[in-house]
Length: 426
Image 1 (spheres, rainbow, N blue to C red):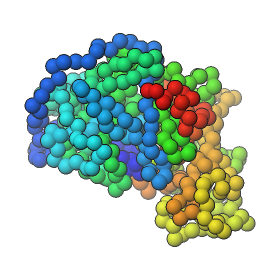
Image 2 (cartoon, one colour):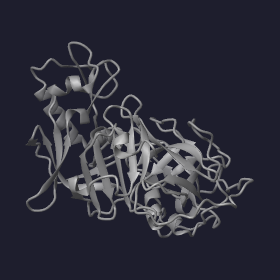
Image 3 (tube, rainbow, N blue to C red):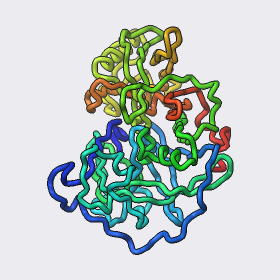
Image 4 (cartoon, rainbow, N blue to C red):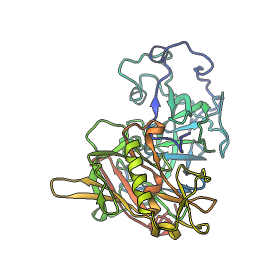
């Protein structure tokens, strides 16, 4: 799976001998078709002007991951997937048969017989232009994550059962990964796979857009109360006029990058400017590059002088924790000792868009009752000079990735009140 849940950058290498070297072995098995077919098909989809909403479950702490329930196959069966804006490919642990699979919530996905051939455009979108096919009848894939986790398998087409906000039910046939060989990362979680909602052609969102189901817009709303939230495709869930928008970076990237930004602390500039900032739902915590992380930690510790907090080095929940005179129960009890941060994005010569990160957007209270810093050193985990906004800092906000207009937006929201957005009935 993903590491911290999954650190942001995945490396995709197709397992063709000419592309990756070596000869096929147990990890590069020929696809074995299952003894069933999907000769019947669900209702043909129609073009929609509405949205698709998924309830989200989980939390930043103590679970350390979020997941959505999707229904896949015909007849549809439920699976729990990790929604990841930092990944394009959606994949499930798959009985093909499975060589190595981790423990999930549901039985392994039983794939359709509809293989994606090597020359399919979606297969090609995962490769370099000079790849060659070891087996032209199938498209192999391998995804590796920074925490050491990986998934290897083949691409298949299958039906997704989706409910729209207009009340229409559709079952588009989409391309996903059937993962028959998984290695658990250092921070693995017991889910059935990953829901890839990145910018690439192979993402579920791009495929739905190509089929005319929804616009290429995805967003999420994670509750700061620890009770999930919701994920949505399309634009009918929010009022665009109330959203603060900033352009996506013009630099080529498969990730949602906004720039350029200035980091502010307590309403004042930290001196760090022209920063490219990644928004990634695949990370529980926020990451700053090493020199920025050290500077921010120094500012926080300086600001805590004279306040009733002391370093809690014995608490290993996260690298930096503080204890009070008595254990804290919630972040609300400790937030008064900390200042807000913000990324200030340039939207032109005179205007700026501020992404506010209040104390509850970068702190957790550990099981030991200490306040711990949910901003980590990204250089230590291979993010180099990138700065990444993770789930902890996106709580209680609509965060919207509009691939139609190439904009990223946000606004405050009550993410725990699903019924307010007509989600409970979906």
